[in-house]
Length: 229
Image 1 (cartoon, rainbow, N blue to C red):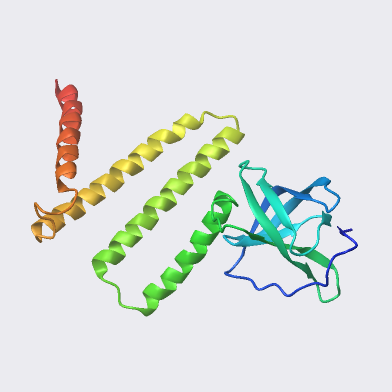
Image 2 (cartoon, rainbow, N blue to C red):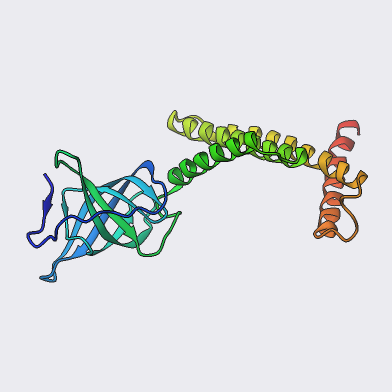
C-alpha cells in the first residue's frame, strides 16, 4: 500500500510535457520531512522523458515536495519535485509523477535514449514517405541508420558473450569489418562529390581529411607490401 503523509493536499492534474517512454529504471528517492528527518525510499521509474517520470513507490511526500533522485544503474543524481499522484478511475494508486528541476535526457540512462530515438526514427520514416527528399541525403541517412543497426548488434553480441562467459573480444573483428565497410562507402561518396565539384580546396576540413587519407594509405600499403614481400 502507498503511505502518503497526513497533510497531503488534494490530488492535482498533471500537465505532462512531451511523450513518456516505458522504461524501468531503479531509483532511490530521498527527501526531508517537516520534522527534519531525511527519508530514502526505493522506487522504480516506469514511464520517463527528459522532463520527469512516473515513479512506483510505497511511501512519498506531498505534492510540491522537492526530492533527490539517484539512478541506481548509473549512480547519477538529479533534483526533482512531485507534481501529481496518479490513480486509476477506480482510485487505485498508479504512481507518483515527478518533474526534474533541470530537464535531463541522460539521467534515465541509455535504454530511455534508445527508446526515444526509435520513436523519432519512426516519425522520420513517415515524413520520408510523405515528402520529397533529395536522393543523396536519403542514401546517406539510410547508410547511417544501417551503420548504427550493425553497431547495436555488435554491442548486443558483446553483452551476450559476457553473460555466457565467452570471450567478448571476439566481437571486435566484427566491428572492424563494419568500420572498414563504412569507410569504403564514405570514400566512394566523397569521390563522387569530388567528380561533381561538390568538394573543393575551400571545403571546411579538407586539409585534415587529406592528411588522414595520406597517412591511412601509407599504413594500408604496408599491409600489402608485407603480403607480397
